Length: 232
Image (cartoon, rainbow, N blue to C red; front, top):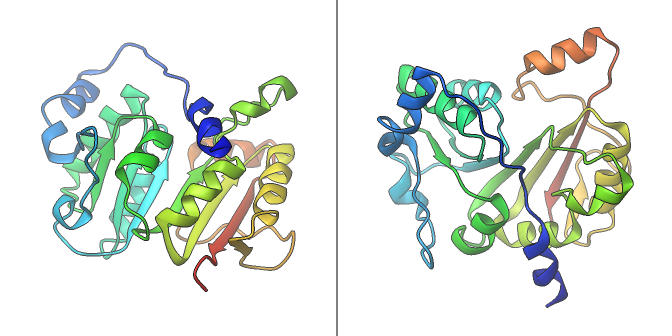
């Protein structure tokens, strides 16, 4: 009960707005029926109906401008990708680009990720959960706003298939340590490389412009990859 109450207080985003380009408006409006997913109260998503192919589903939360998710979906047609983001410019841009590439393995949700996970994603349905460069909320008084909490992991252990994967990347060392410790303390997740070992960036995670710039400035990036052992 306390975990559910805590989850209701976590908002997985800060709503950002701004002027939209013509291409972003087209993505959000004209092309939305092709790529957007409408969330209906009390209704679970049916991946078999959502996607044209019955394939593993990777869920990414907070995809920003969508460059990384677009590249992954383009390079992995044998996998279905579901992205959740509330940043309208990013949603519009990604849909517009997905349309240019005529992708059939990518769908977009514009809602709060925690609410979608709790109420609209079936148990044992996800192969991978991705969280790349989430807001670190670096001030100590804001740590409670971080999306990666034990209560979220409790839920993900249900939504992920057994041996499904959580893959998180961050450029904040303090946040990386927090994520590592939180995940290691959870009974249903196991580090793919062993205790307290960060993973090299997998080839399937594209380098973003943001990340490239950070590397030139000498900033580190930490990849953390755990598997779901619930049911093993």
